Image (tube, rainbow, N blue to C red; front, side, top):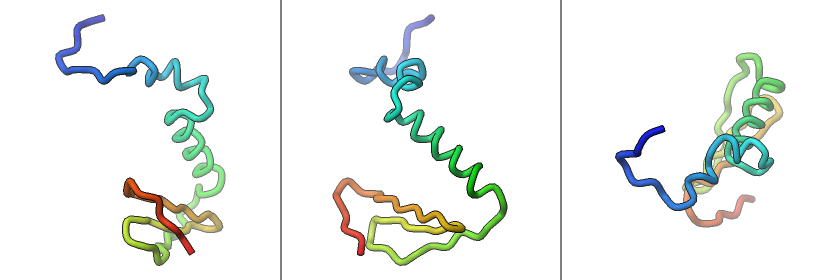
Length: 79
């Protein structure tokens, strides 16, 4: 136990591992599921293929899995 030297944002206690562990929609469980999927389906050294995408959207394919990431604050439409 100690005193933090930097300010903590409001609601920081809701971000603890103990809280996120039981929340299926938490960031912790998002990453745990992503790691599980990677281990189950992408365990070998298959090539990563980048696909055409609109600005501020990253799309790539590895084996039979396509990942689409919107890396901006606005909604983007994908064809």
